[in-house]
Length: 324
Image 1 (cartoon, rainbow, N blue to C red):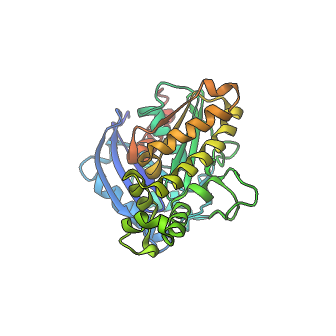
Image 2: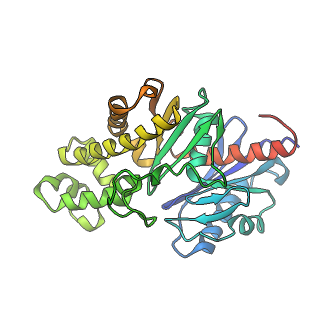
Image 3: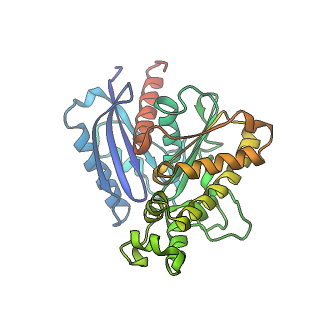
């Protein structure tokens, strides 16, 4: 049966978003909740509850399946969560736990892969065959498409753009490594830089955005101060743009993509950060820099949900012998 709908689930370090999506990429119903801190079963319970909210108006047979994006490394063939930096999901059989309580097939993938999937099918990269995506949020994720198809590597553990080393012996990354892109561009890293400046006179505008309390200062406070014209906040984000650009130079030289899509809450809020990264690529890349455009994501916070639904559609259709 060529079902009309799929459900996309985007699990992030901060929130979970779920949508009922049609084949044109329209989210017909959506629901969101903060990501629980009570352990893996609380997270699964929240996913189940949100799926119930968005699917209550359609018959089970009208839904192709459920795609779930996790901020984790996933053995794609086995559908096994291998590693998860920001949530306690490593080794948890998330797919089996969800499928035990819903009436649909479930497929897992890395959240960065699915954000790229969404942009490929419905967003900024729908007209290109070879592109990279990087998402700047609680962590730094990414995905890559080669020949219009996702590239996941041997077991599905590839395309971890946020965990490329950009500085030997650099600051610690939440994954346990050092000097990764996420060490500089994840929300916690940016907030830590802001708190340092907030202790000095140069950080007065950033501190004001946090209500005068440096302990609650967030990356978003830095973004707001920068957008309001504060020099110190802008400096933090421009430095982040340089680090991002230098990480992407290596990928441009290695893969010769047509496009780099920058998304995630931080990326989409800071166009000048994207512009600075593009300047670094233009200045330091090899010949492939002439082929690549660096663009903001088009789908915003919906990219992961739409990508997860698109994956569910494609998995269901492939089993039925239907082509995209």
